[in-house]
Amino acid sequence: MKTKNIFISFLVLLIGWFLLTWTLDMKSVLIGIGLTGMLAILFCGSCTIFSEIKLTPKAFAYTFIYLIVFMGELVKANIDVTRRVLSPSLPINPGIVKVETRLKSKMARLILANSITLTPGTFTLEVHDDAFYIHWIDVKHAEEAQATEDLVRKFEKILEEMYG
Image 1 (cartoon, rainbow, N blue to C red):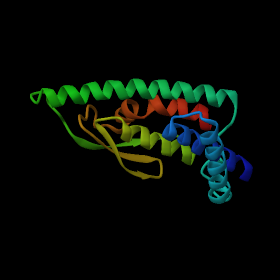
Image 2 (image 1 turned 135 degrees about the vertical axis):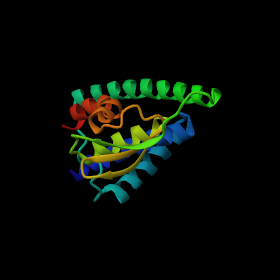
Image 3 (image 1 turned 60 degrees about the horizontal axis):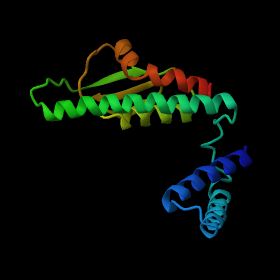
Image 4 (image 1 turned 180 degrees about the vertical axis):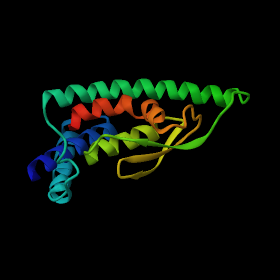
């Protein structure tokens, strides 16, 4: 598990390096590999954050599916919030709803909470056991089961395939 955590940390840091430097100059690439390798070894030798990640073709495929679904939800939510800002007469019904998740993996729950928060109009306030408390700009359903269906299930199904 230690090697897997270091390897995944190295990849994440290296991708971040490439995004920040935005160059494939050999000197920059070598510095990036050396620096991110040292950071991964120093700081992620004992971390367990990546231990639940599966490095299988199925997990990679579902990661891309998740990104597509997330981007679609992100676009829809941005359009909805933009419409509400530009048309103040549109009604809003803000409130806090409780939703339940079936996810057991800490990483999957983290991704779910962040995906909800990154989607405009929703914000994850608290996670307590299997319950997420979410501020929603326009509460369509106050019932827990329907709110869970609206906010969580589209992400949860894919995360279950990724993290089991």
